[in-house]
Length: 113
Image 1 (tube, rainbow, N blue to C red):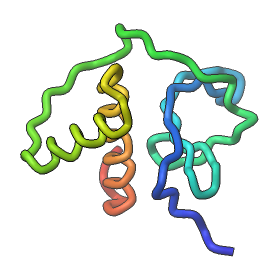
Image 2 (cartoon, rainbow, N blue to C red; image 1 turned 60 degrees about the vertical axis):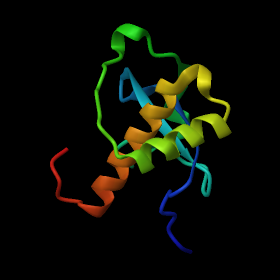
Image 3 (cartoon, helix red, strand yellow; image 1 turned 90 degrees about the horizontal axis):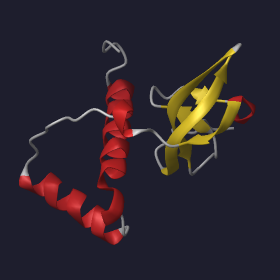
């Protein structure tokens, strides 16, 4: 039995999850290979701990200004247009940042979280 590396994400979203006796809001990624839900730190979240999907209110959002080279910018724009996501570009940016952080911590496991 091989271990899934969770390299392809089928979907992502903001969910209410149960942690012991409390509930919290977290962004989860769903692996397209194995179907598991993962937190942004790559920790699996059991489906029975997921209360439901939720929408993040604008007051919980933060703005980040990032300078990217033209190649990365063009690839992001192509992704947005190909996926017909013009109406919610911030959702794409959240996913790309989350996946980037997840990848960063897998290649540099001792990086501070």
